[in-house]
Figure 1: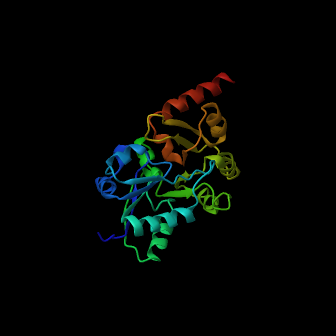
Figure 2: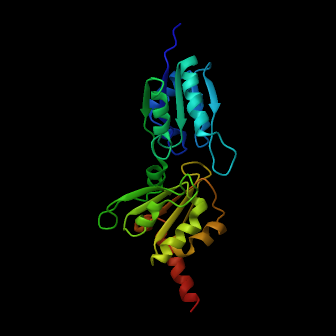
Figure 3: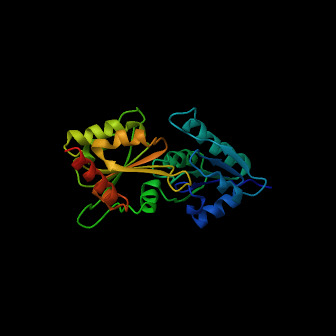
Length: 257
């Protein structure tokens, strides 16, 4: 039987297996090979046919991981030898998922491609927490920024974003939390609301709400770790628990007088 190479990039969503699209499920069910990431809920692999080859190619900054060049080559090799390859990626393939690089590489070999969008954690996890990224009269826009560039430095975009009223969502930036907080403090914005969401949409989810000035200490006290999303802006105060937090902080200030 003639092999017809094809590569589909599928966004698996932020973690909860029910947050993948129906089209994504159909792609998984049709796949001959699935290359899946560290942030993909492995329950989604149950949709694959029994003979499907499943290969973990997870990448985590703090652990031994698979290089992107190697993943690119696997995509092409398996497409040429097996047929339909699904690249299953956490969130959305084109939001810091390096999906564009994988598509570019496949095109070099004239392999047809398709993309099934996924719910990015930047909008999915904030939505689940009922934090609106935009809100009339409060925030006219939102920025989604990587916490660290390939060089390991803080993204220059954050230096611009801190000067706006936009909601800022930082992905893969928890390791830079202290640096980000210090930047906002330098611009006189230490009172700005901030949220940290770890393992969002999963049973192990943890959220910490606070202000820039105290968030580093709060994160340590609450033992927040990776992967965690950072949300900065006045809209964070719309979280249902933030009003209670403000009352507690006010009481602490009165008690210290």
